[in-house]
Length: 186
Image 1 (tube, rainbow, N blue to C red):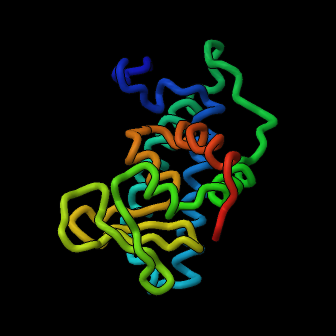
Image 2 (cartoon, rainbow, N blue to C red; image 1 turned 120 degrees about the vertical axis):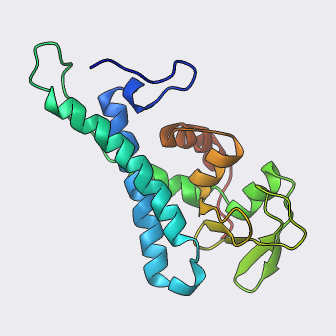
């Protein structure tokens, strides 16, 4: 089997196995965070099914490539399987805590948010609208558009959409210095 991903848009087949495993772990932690938020307060997380489906799609793509590699792992030509990995859970949580989602949304998009109870609301940065449908739960670090686009997620999915970042690990790399530069204001 050879790599068939488009050369201008690298796919999971073009990633090293260690990076693929890391990417799967990052998406898995993201999914766990969404599920924990939905379990804690189901009424405030209307975007959960769509965000979950998006993450499941990414995990399916990654796991398909990993399974293909596992099947040829014993081949004399197969590279060594990565060992001695460490979890990125702590790093991901520090980024989520270090980047205030409300501030970030307002800094990188023209969207202006206003407080509406526990959440913040404004015009969605991903589609044209006259009535605000974009909600941010600052305490949970989650966002959702209840309007036309129905998108939602956390700081990682927001950065991926705004900056057209295709890989989770690239979003982590992009957000790491931002998280280190400022604190979370809650």
